[in-house]
Length: 322
View 1: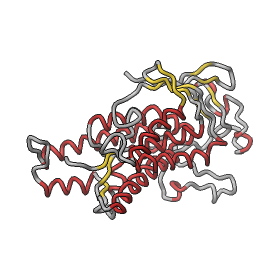
View 2: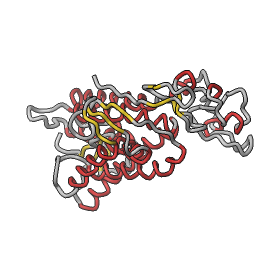
View 3: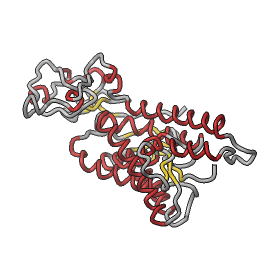
View 4: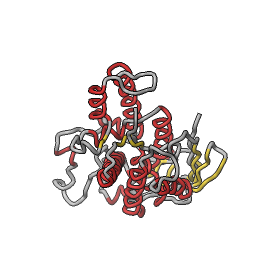
């Protein structure tokens, strides 16, 4: 099956590591043995007045050193425990997998709704139009009903076909977990949801301006935002397609950006939300510029490839005939 491998050298012992750890406090790259701050003499121990090496590395990263009151995180103010042993502690470093799981759960729910509630004829058209309108109001961000705020987010996890979700899943699986390691789970969550929602809103805004209406679904905006971050942080990251063909990250993302740009003029695949792609990519590039001075990056990644509809799939799709 697909596999990803990032080869980096531990700053402490020089060991080559397939899946390195990146310290968010000093920016260094370390093997599993030296990943903890106290095991690589992290300068952050002194800066944080934490000689015991007990960092607050919770899901909420909003920790400040100005004062005890200022350093209180948002989640602490809300009474949410994100420390060790809490249910939220399991999400640290795992939001990529959480989002992938939500994508597949949502896709399964779509299939159940379409096949057992809506129904289709031999040409694949919806039988119960009233039920299909309900389906759209749950899973699709549409130009007709942008006020359905929940669809700003449910549409990110919804997909139009098995190839669509498979392609997006491959991209997010390989690149999402790298970006999450760089920026932390909280910021990754905000980036994923915000870029996905804004990409979808950008797509339907064009539909409203052009008077064509329509809708959008898929994680393409969030996927290309992830790609945009990586292009800024490490444009020369070598990506091995199918483990054989090397390609720098800037070329891989640039290729799909070009496809989306041409798609705006009717050149390329039909039914693809090209505006959503470009909006998501733009958000990722802007965010990458904001954080690039505090992120350490690997130089190699083996990427297993994917299916049609995008870079191994970011291909948020316009709503078309069922």
